[in-house]
Length: 312
Image 1: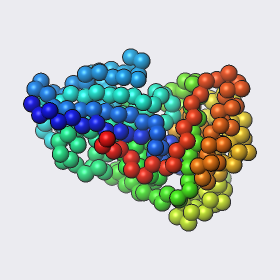
Image 2: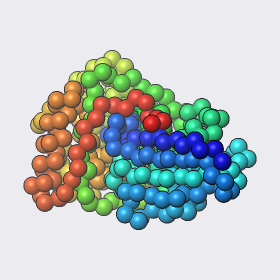
Image 3: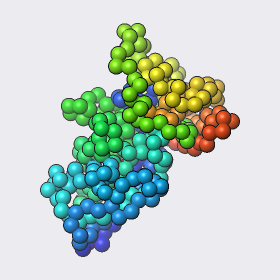
Image 4: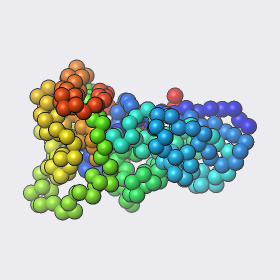
């Protein structure tokens, strides 16, 4: 038995980014998940223990996003009987709108790929990580997975057919402030309430916002980014799921945020900011609204993580 042990980190992510529903995502520096893997004499992949999940996650690798993603890769390599032990250390909240299941999916397959000597390049792990997300959401939603694996700010041009994922520039002073209020919103519930149709006016405005945001990133034009970080389609339909959302948003903008919206399906709320100092102030302003309402919350302030999943 090889005594080599691999420990990896996969970061939390913000999906949709206001103007890019199921098309935009970016990675945070923290929080995230850690996975440890090692070879064992017992055939097959086994999850030995999980920390930080309060018993809510299964140790059956076929019922765990980290296990499913790793198993998919081992199957592709015809190594499904290879003996591997896996530990999962959840270091981010479940059901937060920060890509918790995606971070585990990415960490699982990334760790096993490292243990095996990197038979796949990083981007080549995406199809396997998506299998973990399918287990969690019964859909191949890729904005969190791609961002957690590859890092940076990503545009998902086409996921269904050929995983066309395009990296976007990250302006040097762009920071994110994220507040996670401890209220429960199920992803399937947040998606179920969405209307399948939009008006021509909404399409034109949202397309302009997405294009403006991308141009703003390329030019490091923070004013254009601020004018473009607006969601006229999804946010109005989901805002009522998050207590005091519009008060939180107003507090963020008043504190200097470029823009503020819902992270993924919520309940986390994110704001993009110019500079770390402003991001700190924005995070505190958003946190104060929830605290005044008696809702416990956590705040994360981070530069955009351009590395994604890493070996520790």
